Image 1 (spheres, protein in one colour):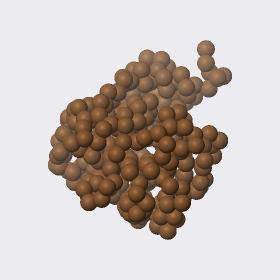
Image 2 (cartoon, rainbow, N blue to C red; image 1 turned 180 degrees about the horizontal axis):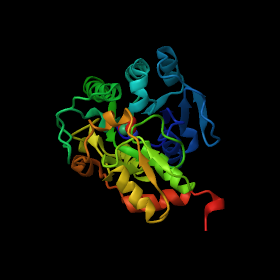
Image 3 (cartoon, helix red, strand yellow; image 1 turned 60 degrees about the horizontal axis):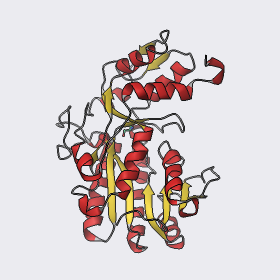
Amino acid sequence: MVLEMGGKILVTGSSGQIGSELTGALISRFGSSNVIATDIQSPVRNDCRTASLDVTDRDAVFSFIKKEKVSTVIHLAAILSARGEKEPALAFNVNVNGMRNILDASVSADVGLLFFPSTIGVFGAGTPRENVPVETITRPSTMYGITKLLCEQLGEYYSAKYELDVRGMRLPGIVSYRAPPGGGTTDYSIEMLRAAAEGRGYSCFLKEDCRLPMMYMPDAIDSIMKMLEAPEDRLKHRTCFNVMAFSFSPSELEQEIRRLRPEFRVTYTPDERQLIADTWPRSLDTSAAAEEWGFAPSYTLTAMVDDMLKHLTPVSRRQ
Ligand code: SER
C-alpha cells in the first residue's frame, strides 16, 4: 500500500514539532480536503480540517477513524525522552496504548498505511556507538526508548498479520525553528541556536563533547514523504530504518554558531538528560534507507546553522 491521492489522511500529534510542518507538506502534496490535523487539543490552523483526538481514548480513536473513512494514519502523538523519564506512566500510556489503539482501529476500519516515528532512543547498552547498523543490539534504558522499540515490533507484527502497511524510521534529533520540540534530549540544539539568534548566552544541559546524530527539519519532512510514497515491494525493512544527516556535539555547534556570531558563549552544566544521551550512539548507518526508499538528506551542519539563524534572528537584530 502506498499513500495515494484521494484517501483521507489522519495526522495525530499534529501540533508538535514535526506535525506542525509535516501536516503542511501533506496538504501541499495531497490537498487540504484530504488531510485532518488532530492533537489532544484541536490544532490551530486554517488550511485543513482540525479536531481534538486523544490517542489514549480507545473508543474515540475507533470512532474517529471509522467515521472519517481514514485511509492513511500519520501517528506522531508521543512523549519524548526527557519528559518520559519524568512521567514514565504517561509515556507508556501515550506511546504504547496510543499506538495499540491506532493499530487496532486501523485494522478494523481497513486503513491501508500507517506511519510513526521511531527514534535513536531504541539503542542503549551494548549498541555500537558509531555507524550503528539497522540490525543491532537494542536495549534501551529510557521509557521512551522501550516504548518506541515496542512500537517498531508491534508495527512489524501488525504488518505481517493484517493487511496494514506499517512504516517507521528511527529519527535522530531534529532541528527546526517553527514549533518548539516537546521534551527531548536533543532539544538543547534548538535552545542554543535560539539564544544565539536573540543575542543571549546559553547554559547547556549536555556535556560539551556529547556527539549525537541529528538532522534538519526540511530533510526530515522530505524523508518522511519519500518513505510514504516508496513502493512496498522495495522495502525489506519496515519500521526500523536508521536516518541521520550529520553528528555534532554541543561545542561543535557552538563553534559553528560563532562563525556568524563571534560574541556567542555557552556554559556547560549537564543535568540528568546527559544520562539519557550517554546511552545513545554518535552516528548511524543509513544505507538501508538510502537503498530501499531513496533517503538522501541535503543539509550539512553549516547550512543548517546558516538557515536556522536566518529564521530565528529577530527583525530588530538583523543587519
Ligand atoms: N529528539 C528525541 C529526543 O531527544 C530523540 O528521538 O527525545
